[in-house]
Length: 292
Image (cartoon, one colour):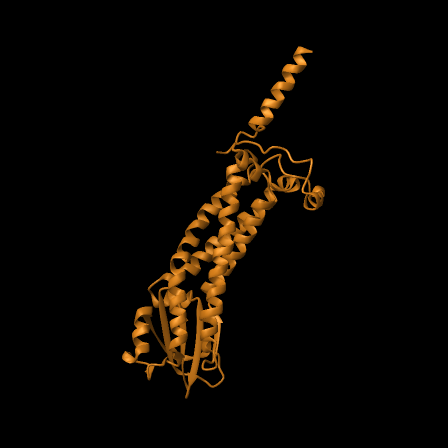
């Protein structure tokens, strides 16, 4: 598989200068991945069923106040936590409120509350001041992102292994470039789409005229950093060819303008030597020289 012609083409893609700066490029990708692993693990805490962890790693936070009282909604991926506060100075930020009591609800419980069957509901249209239609949108998006958030956190371990492998010339191969580049490319699009969808649906629904304020939660911001790290990692993998392959930077313009370049050589195999086609060519040259 590693010596397949199509795989060799992919392994050869990249810039020679990037190969020379292998440790810098992959070291950068490695650093982003390590930080991303820690930060994303924190963001995944929003999957927890404990109200305290949901509040700590919520994907969205909204707050509302009325008649000296207030409520804060923490949107987690598994649960919604409502914190009702008894002492709310007018014009203050929700972090300054006191006398607060937090209660966690499964998203299915929120649906029942919005039907008018639960405490804190105003005519079945709002939960502690937060419109039911907004909570319904957030509930739908939270459910969609549960599996993806878990998978993203777990697969970062494999991304870390890929960086540790490609940073060493002797370990880098055509196949390693493929499994380093394409999964990250897929992640950039899939995670990016999930984040944009959450921000443009749950965020917009919560941040309406009926609520005092809204902000992206720390869990959401953690996965935004994870997306940035995936983009950096993909860029480093794509720019760096396998050892002794790729094209020089000066010929990139020629390649874009004419579609041709003379400096591209066959990608190298796992053992670091030339490809099978290159070996055959060298052997024929050696035989001809002996005959003469």
